[in-house]
Image 1 (tube, rainbow, N blue to C red):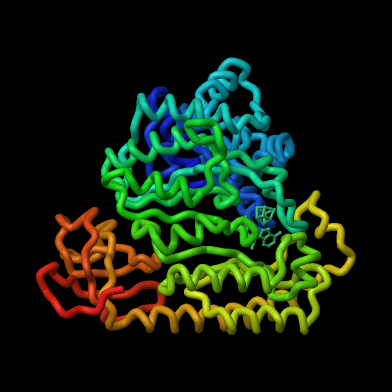
Image 2 (cartoon, helix red, strand yellow):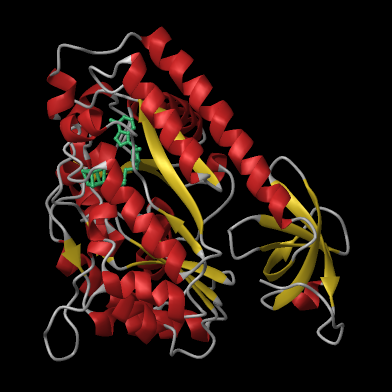
Length: 444
Ligand code: SAH
Ligand code: SF4
């Protein structure tokens, strides 16, 4: 979502004459778009800010200006603390105010004082951004993110999202369809619908009734040009029937789902306030696999949640063994100020967390390699996204979001081609282009 937000910041700054550049030495404005989900992310922001403070001083010595802005959830959560710790910062704003960036810059210009803006106005933000997009469509690649939902009302006890992104908000269907059409017009072939709880989507449809995600996906798949649709991140509690059905019936909806469970222990899930049990999660997966047998699953895991015992951690390993994930993200529990779990007295020592994380990641890596191996010999449709490092090589994505290297010319950019998967590397697959006319290939 931060990638999407950063692109929108470029859109709103374009009329003021700003263009994105690659190196900060020549920048008039540096915006750090931040994430607050784990502690490491916050520390990274402060160390980056130290680097830009030095650059700012170097530019000042040459008589040049550099404004420094902190955007995103660290800005939202830390507010004035940032300008207190880092005097060189000119602007701090949260994820719901960046559409007002030109105005905030002007305020700073006039007052010559740091401007802090952390109010919530999600609906206003999207209206403002939509108007800006009509005037200044930015060119994009063949894949694009599209935020359809923001915020969260679930309050898992470890998580800052409900505090930094605010309450659940779903954009109206018409607004989303309009943005998707615009993207399709710019050559986008694959849409990834975004939301902190994307499948809790309940945006108003034309007649005012709330629309569910499955219905929205079916509507978006009517747009000619849009060939593939994905969505993330989903919550197990919100996997409604219409969405599961869409996985069985809509060929544009990719057979791939990121569905975080966090832990395989029911006691830990309860303490996390996840609102579902392992059985309920497994039942969702069973229904998904029945609707779409080729579906690949991924998840997020937290190890070392306060009070997690060895036996409870083993339950997570068992659950993973039973499911077979295509890939997954895993993290050590990071206490976030202001969240209930951070107050829990039974914090797990760092070395125990590290040891558990290593074991969990070994298992998940082995599953990822095994999943990739099952693709060898298959012919998969690959959306060609960009040129590879070598001449005559292109990189695309399989339906399962794997990177696929192919020997192809640049004309193939934006096309979905058939590729026979020949080999599996650590992070990607390599395949051979199979011309349409060649028969007798196994396809999924
Ligand atoms: N809404 C999604 C997750 C959004 S946050 C869901 O409910 O699944 C992305 C991921 O960050 C989470 O799935 C979780 O695994 C991780 N995460 C969030 N807070 C964390 C914390 N305090 N410590 C470690 N990992 C955390
Ligand atoms: Fe955070 Fe996801 Fe839980 Fe919401 S549902 S509080 S975003 S982990």
